[in-house]
Length: 147
Length: 276
Image 1 (cartoon, each protein chain N blue to C red):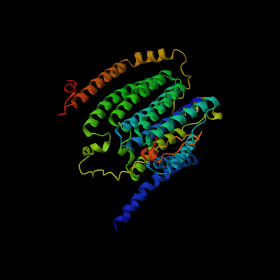
Image 2 (image 1 turned 135 degrees about the vertical axis):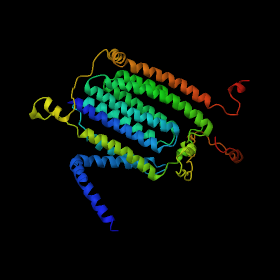
Image 3 (image 1 turned 180 degrees about the vertical axis):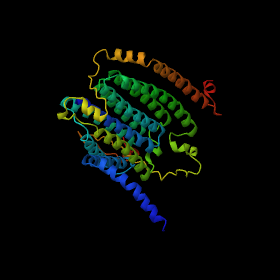
Image 4 (image 1 turned 90 degrees about the horizontal axis):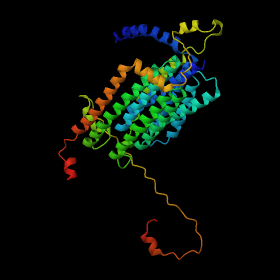
């Protein structure tokens, strides 16, 4: 009884991992994150394989996952080399740097306005005042923006 | 105009039985809940993917509700310990995966991905696949993610680049979320329409299994000598595949080196010149 439940739940988790990886691969622009999302899709498939292997009570699912891991390692090596070369030539990890590789007749992707980076103001620690209050030297305070 | 009406009629004539049959087959209360969950999840992911949106936590809430509805669609476990362990690990894996694709800082993305991998490894362990759990953590989280963190930090010393603050826009994001939702929905639909239990009046076993077409062999997971048995299986049944995988790794190694050397024909001084 629990075997069917295990299988169903694991297949659901595998599907979710695959779907999330798919969304990330299409939506993100950083080459490395796109690669990580592809790996996440492989993880989803692996989870399903292990679940089926357990359900059928044999080793085939786990063997296949082992090969998936081997292929993923190869893929990681090649992708790493490609990313290093692309980053050296394009100067950026942004995938849109390479958009001249698109099909003929396709419009170029134009960036929208870059939103400002929200830099939070640094929070400086405040000490509890203690002891005798010193004389405040205005001139010294003018010369120090913050400690 | 006169040609349009017969065309529309023909279209209706062709498609209405298809639609009716599909509706009769798939439209049940369960699939309605499933569609709700899928739509909620897609909208939640869309909202979370909008950079700088103030409603990102609202999107996270929607996605969480969707996850709970989805979880109610599959068969529950009988034991409390197994259910608690599974739901903690599965929740951790899925949440970390979502955080991977919605974080704007790539370093955070890689670390969330590593967390998701740890969750997957634990799920493998729960299934009795001990060797795979260790291999996943060692190969993925230990090697691949860390190497990519190195590359990320070499390429982007500042950590976060301007293009990580832009997204593709609302429509492509929505389409992507829709595609993901369709995949998840199709698989969940197939899973949740699987035979849940054997009908009590048909006696144990065979009849419902034949009817479902699934070879149900709920054998206990192989106990003891786990790695030895897996290795025996691999090197007996999949020997050729193992050799091919080894060759593939070697070729990938050589290929990676070749790609990096090929990419280094720039006019700038190369490594040798710098060493002098």
